[in-house]
Image 1 (tube, rainbow, N blue to C red):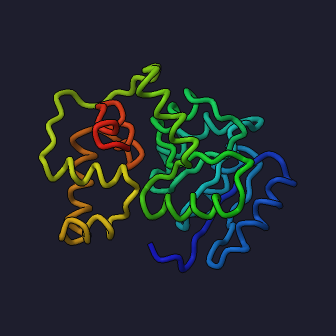
Image 2 (image 1 turned 90 degrees about the vertical axis):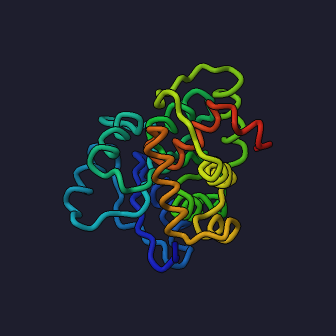
Image 3 (image 1 turned 60 degrees about the horizontal axis):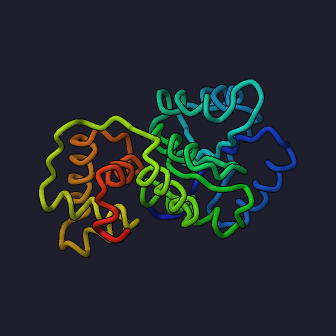
Length: 225
């Protein structure tokens, strides 16, 4: 995705944190915070007021009064499913990360992350459909694969073709559509077609869900990811 203009909604109940985050974000050329909200209800109201324009990315705090991030996420999925959501949190709890990924979050960034990681998270989410830092990914996969406490529902008896499996593996390696197309000598449109078939076959909601499916199917270990 060309980084011409990235519109961002920032939702956090602490004004000083919002102001600091906004300042960090707008140091990046093309990043523009178009919504500031103090809780989930405020965010949903402002998204409605902004229609038909929508932000590209929502940075969503978990702990807020009136309507917190966990409660807000289903409303965003229902009414604004085309907007990417990155969770901001102080908590590195493994089960929480996995739960939010299953519920449709596109990324999870700890609040002590620096500006470079935040920029990487935004750009990675827009390019790949998801972003998880190395620490978050390890914790999440440990929860999903080893402890097996989260049991997301995917369709039964899923059979993937060799090419679909290959595309899924490259998605899990965080390659962009363009990079996958170049590696497999396909057009980007054809790669998007495979991605859409993977979503349909697995019942996953987004690219992050495909990674979760691969984890639950024990494909990540076999691929050395």
